[in-house]
Length: 273
Image 1 (cartoon, rainbow, N blue to C red):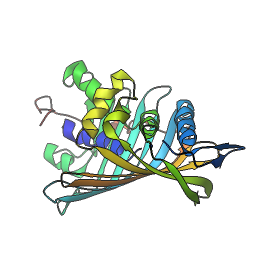
Image 2: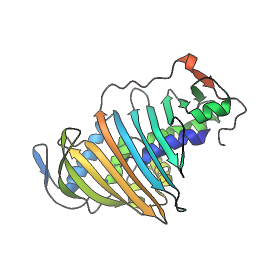
Image 3: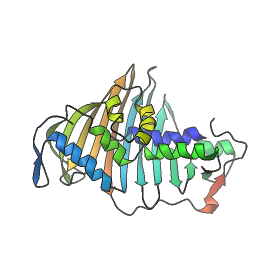
Image 4: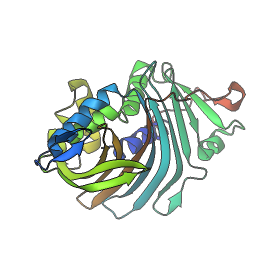
């Protein structure tokens, strides 16, 4: 069961992401170097407590099996950590997940909606409830919360600051907002070391197979990322991801499904399988 929950966090984490050259570009009323602009974006992220975004991810494993994911997410850190990840299209190796996948995390409880899981459990309820404080004990709760936190914007933009070759490559409009387009790359191992120690091990596991990650970032005049693209390849595996931000610090509606729409996970069902 946990595989389905973790998958949503991992996909969202892959879809988020980069500093170096001194090409001056305007950001607000001040001209900043490309490196300074990325650093400012990382600082701005400290004041972002919620956001919504669209996700597109294409990937391939070392055996040549290809997959793709499209969806959206809502994420908030205050007043409590909560997320709503909807993957409307999920495919791998020529197979699709019927109806896609949706995972809502609220108050340390995960609600999963997936046709395949509904059929497996033999329930007529569209949602399945997983109390993370009871299933697998505190360790299971911590692991899933860690996965949810990987889509935290602060972690993502901090990784960008590890780049030594970032440069401004032009100006573009993203969803009607004027932005400066930056391009560069960052070494995965060095980027992870910029994160808080309690975050490093969690993120390192997702970047362990990569040496370098290329990125494009579209930053607006307020220093906020409007669009971020990532791509990388290593030992035959590859991925290309785009995250398009739609809002920052707006009131989000992240709530548990109606009680009459939720079924319980069977007590004897292993969560690690």
